[in-house]
Amino acid sequence: MVESNYDILGVPEGASKKEIQDAFRKLALEHHSDRGGDDEKFKRIKLAFDDLKRGKKYPDSLEEIHKKSRFYSGDSEEEKRKKNLLLSKDVAREMKVAEEWAAALNRVDATGVRLFGSKELGELEFERKANKALSIKGKYWAGHLTYDGPIIMWGSITNPYFSESEKYKTHIRVTNGNFKLIDPIENKYDITNGAKITADNGDIIVGSVSGIKDLLPDPQGRVGMHILKEHFTELRAPKGKIIAGNIHETVKLEAETVIVINLVDNVKIKGKNILVYGSKINYNVEFELKIEGKIRFYDQGSGYDISDDAVLKLENGKQFRLRDLKGAQMIGYGGEDITYDYLDGKEKKNQTKSTGLKLGDFFK
Image (tube, rainbow, N blue to C red; front, side, top):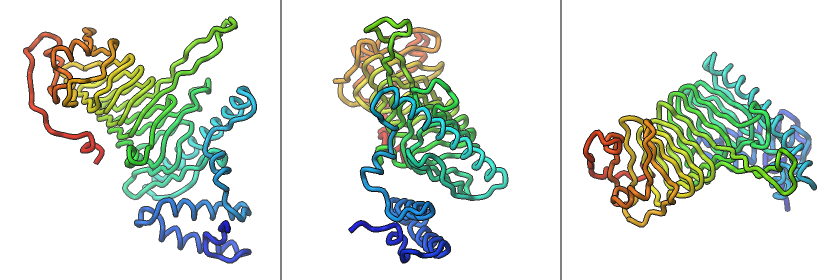
């Protein structure tokens, strides 16, 4: 038998508004993750409370939840596009309200919890904590959000790449502090479809990152002709680190230090210290090393999967094929620093021993 929302909160059917509120507060205090409770159970309790406020007796079925957790799909591509654009605009406006709410709490150094987002796509729980961190739980669909403090997030991030207006697209910016997805690899949280994350004065710690390529009809109307539009997912931490998992299909990363696993299909990385832990670097991968920087490939085997078009560029414009570096036994032999100065011909190769660090050490 399906539990009603009254059953989930432990109140009788027809309970008063105050009885429902009191039951929710009691259960929320007991099951909230900040108090060591079960996060999924808390979400179920919160959803039951929200449903009852709208007069809804039973929670959504699995089918209904699935429909609300993704962008709309109708009978035609035009219908899908129109509906998804409307949803994106609605969510983007909500994120602007969320930004203003979080900024107001910051100004008076207050804590608070509030839901923002879309009933159709799913709401996000925002919480401004006593340590100034902004906690976000749920999937981030669209819109700009700037916050003056660290952001910690339980959920994935996507972007309405099909929108022609930048103000509706996803761009999360942290002006002071780190941006961090909680246990992103274990939880399978990812950043996709051309979203942008910027940490002006901090680090970015995420899981897998991917962009998207969109095949569009020829703008001149030629039948059977199409153009390929690339929507880069971009992560920037100009004064800090980017720590990520697998990077694929149209991504740009820029930071002082960039730490990644595998790189596949049109990935561009710029940094002063670049560390690669996987064995796959292929399909139009490009590194750009800053002056006085170094790059290191940690894989112990010599069987690196490297595409012929993968290159390493220096900030002064000099360029090297990664296959040539592999042939010179500088890639795939257990973690040697390859310095900017060595590649630029200013100094002899400065070999250093491997530090023995593992990628998992950085996510702690």
